[in-house]
Length: 229
Image (cartoon, rainbow, N blue to C red; front, top):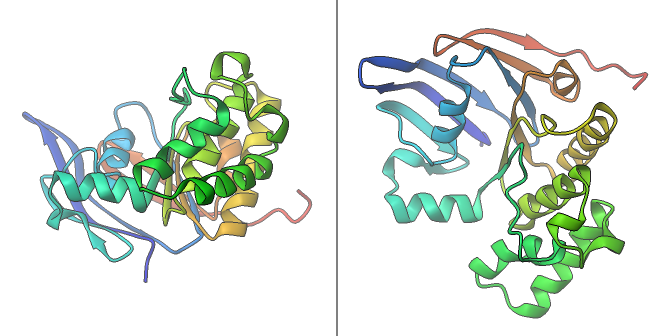
């Protein structure tokens, strides 16, 4: 089964066509970079894949879930159980600690407290923040906040992670560390990742780069792994 299947997806706003017959697939555990100039349709595509927006036509499947057959409740459940998103500006809840931010999606799923706490402790340690678990977002650096966001995304054990410019708000050194972390976690957990980016560095952790222009995928590059990295 594919982690993601996008088939002939179209989307327009008024008379403006934003997506024009977009098709591609992703295998479980695969990392794919999505590049293109502003206005090319990247964010709209990401929103459609994540169930935030609905395409006008075409089909999107995440695992065995056909998004066109889901109502708003079903799409909300999809985002709670199958698809996580990592944002450029982190989107952490400011009144919650790092650990509580990671725990929040598990509370929504109704996990019992002992199981939640065990999962959160493991994830916080995995992203290197065991000593910062009680800190609130305003007490964390940008890199630390993104690590919390990554742990939160992993909490539900998703089939697919969508990352929208995950290093866009970080300095180059911190961004490199975050990308290395994403690469490692994706491989260890077998989670597919679709990363919208303007950064060539992001493409280095991906097996393919899809390039968009005017609502279409115009090029797909296979990335040859650099064994020296």
